[in-house]
Structure formats: C-alpha cells, structure tokens
Image (cartoon, rainbow, N blue to C red; front, side, top):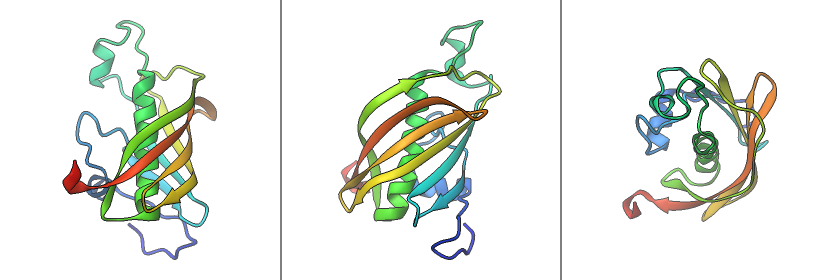
Length: 155
C-alpha cells in the first residue's frame, strides 16, 4: 500500500487483499484494488476475466458467460475491503444481504470487470454499499450489498 494521506487515493496490492479477505483460489475474485478513498467511501477493484476460469467449463460451454452470482461475489469482495478499511481492521466483512440486483450485460472471457462500491452506511457492526460491475463503460451488474463485521475466530 502506498503512503498516502487520508484524502489521497490508495492502491492495494494482492498481498494486502489476501490479508483482508479470507477467500482463496478459486473464490478470490478481486485481482487488485486500483482506487480507495475513505473520505469519499469509494473503492474500485478489478477482476480480469479469462477463458481459463473454472466456471466457464460448465457455464454455457461454447458460449461462455460469467455466472451473475460470481459477479455479485466479486462486488461483495470489493465492498468488503471498503467496509474493512473504513470500519474495523480486526474483523472480516461477511455478506449479509443483496438487494435490487440487476444483470444488464453478459460478462465474457477477455472482459475486465471494474468493481465500483460506494459506502452507503458503515458502523462497527457492518455496512452497506451500492455496487456496480462495469465493463467497457457499461454497467454489467448493479446491486446494494449489506455486510456484517465478525471476528475471524467466529468463522
């Protein structure tokens, strides 16, 4: 992580993402955080979608489309990093609920998912973000995602 002031954007490398999120291959769906601004409650992550992803073997073979639930999971992971950084560094953000999910554009191999999450509410018990997965400046998926913060020992 860069040495930035609280108002400067922060970039988070994979090593720090692994320290924050408990997910591992094949369920870690954020490749990097390219922007984090705690003053704006905004995070932008990136997921590079490749044809080598395991789920493409069975999800519409011949016409590979990334499962919508995995796009929501990628958004939740990016939002979880924001909630973690904003609220409490010793707890893990766990998915609580998803509201108003809309799937607007299929995501295919070669796409780069830009995972935008804006904090709507945050506390020491959890948070809620408005999240959008964007491909080539078009919204692919959007949803409101809620989190609970739990101690690692409770998992």
